[in-house]
Length: 347
Image (tube, rainbow, N blue to C red; front, top):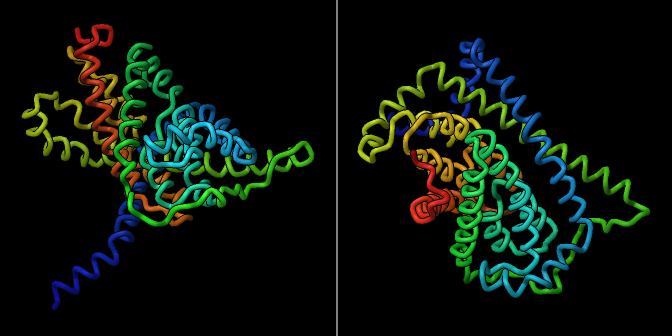
């Protein structure tokens, strides 16, 4: 009975112990942690806010119009057979592609709150509409990190192909469920925008967007601290040593292990490290980057969880979908590099 009691007690207290350990590490490794926090804040202020905040405001404003119903009527003939989602889901799909993380998840959650789509349809949307945007993939990753527009274009193409593939596969998610909405339930609960209430609607949209952008900033800073602690404490080196035999077996340079682990936690830091590794076969850098872009990282996962937690949506389809998207994106990238000479960047 005693061992069982200790196991139960450990399970009950595991999160407090983790949080306590994190707090102690912030104190112990404060010298290296402070620059990491400043770097995270700089990254958020210079990259995340300019690229995402306008899209957050625009999507909030569009949710106060009838654009969702218009797209639903036009694209229902394509969305239903491909993704088993009513046409209104096209709004989440399109905005998720052009905006970036976590706009797709935010729209899918709004759809559920407004009863525009059923629970199962919104979960299918979660699995494939929350994507990295072209501004980040082509501009930040392609041009700034890899120094190549072509690499950014390749990664964006395979990213979109992977997300569409995941959407088609997840059309079978809870396919036989009876929890569906009839056309009479297509009621947008948001206040319709007009010239008389434009100021009020704009103010509400900005307030909601500020809340979301601050949430993302908090995650970026926290995960910058976590990565810094892992490096300073030597845990990252220990993990790299443990995984070295596996990477040697699959013939991948072990110098990629640490950036991949960082990328699993927070993609921007991980991809930046991967792009800076000198390798004769640049295709390895690109393929690993494609996987991380598709997966999104634990930081984005927790951002999505914080958004969906106020609804009855399950996070499972999102987790499964992003893992599958990362795998498919890396496979598609490998095929493009080996089949199309224009995308072969190996020395």
